[in-house]
Image 1 (spheres, each protein chain N blue to C red):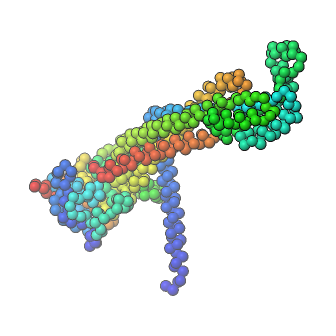
Image 2 (cartoon, one colour; image 1 turned 180 degrees about the horizontal axis):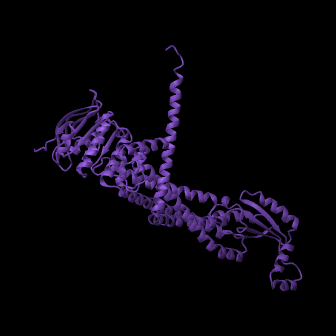
Image 3 (cartoon, chains in turn blue, yellow; image 1 turned 180 degrees about the vertical axis):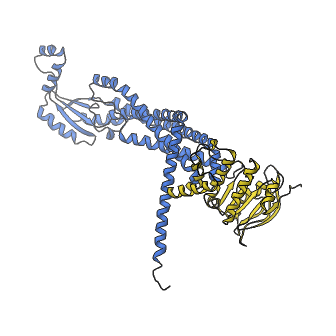
Length: 329
Length: 220
């Protein structure tokens, strides 16, 4: 043959071969997915027991995490709760108060400032039942102008010394008569929350191990039940990867569905808490709202639980495959 | 039958961890396309011999060569591919009882990743060959012992193996069925498949008029 085109041929064969390999891979994945889901569906009791165990194990760290996050949101910059009030000397005018507010705002630790004029303060006081009459007896408005500072909690530091330092600096303004701090409790809370975060991490690690063991054990039992099948498939040329695949998917489903279930549990528990918490925060005049599980946390929980399921299954299957390299009839 | 050697045993010895000596100094050459019976009393090592070929066991000493390559040189990841060349049939066919006949026979093809349309065609052909074309939807527990054994055979041959290894395939069957199954094996041998059958049924083996290897129990 004098045809000089042959080089093209192997390349076509190779890409065709790659396409075929991919199709084989895809169809085997599909088989394993179908098969593992069917196993779950047709063994509802053992599946549910495992799922509930995983869900309970995961819901504890998840709910603790949500709780800590909620408390942390109290200490965030954008909350109106933590404030520092500067009571100005009686002679300071409204204009001077505004100037001072501008000046204070330029400090690195300060997020925003507002001026509450003595007239505004008086109006507010009048709204409070019983006080209106008392105020009438005073001929003159006894209230000073006030500058309310919302600090950047993140830049303020956490120790009492940091806070004292900042207070001292505020007192150096000549217009200021007194500084009233409403943020000490917030700082304590932040310190406590730092510890709480660690505790959550430890609990999460322990319970993640539990999930790993629960999934591992479930898959181990599943392997035990299907030993004959594994022997036969091995004998007719199944690779370890082929044998492993349905079990890995099995673990993945357990983790993923267990994660879903735990999110459900935590959300229901939160619904239970929303009303009393809102009532409480209303009593404190706070606009605090109990936050649920946001999208990021939801995805985090699902990804972590699915990975734990996968790893648990992987450990169980690999242990079995190592042990049983040789088949005995 | 060609003159090409397909299976060769070189001074093979097999001692189980229990201390039992199953094979001692076995030298054996089998040509491609041969049909061979292995006989001997129980405990003579018939099963062991077949298992060594299928790599279900490894020899304690010596080498088993397939197409001139020692099996001990195969890497773990090459073993599945090697096993796909073999159809192994046990006395108990080891069917999967939660799947119907079709799915049992389709298993080797699923494992090797064959497209679904080809699988249907091949499985039906294999079941026709063993006379179970009408039982594809049955489950193993609905079948007789002979039918189950034939499902096992269909599963062993569906992948078109170059070697069929059968360990007492007719052990549980009545003589008529046994004869039937032996003829099925002979048909596969006619199309060039190397067939090794371990059996202690001397009468049946003699009637088939093929080469016979007799294993003696080792007394040491």
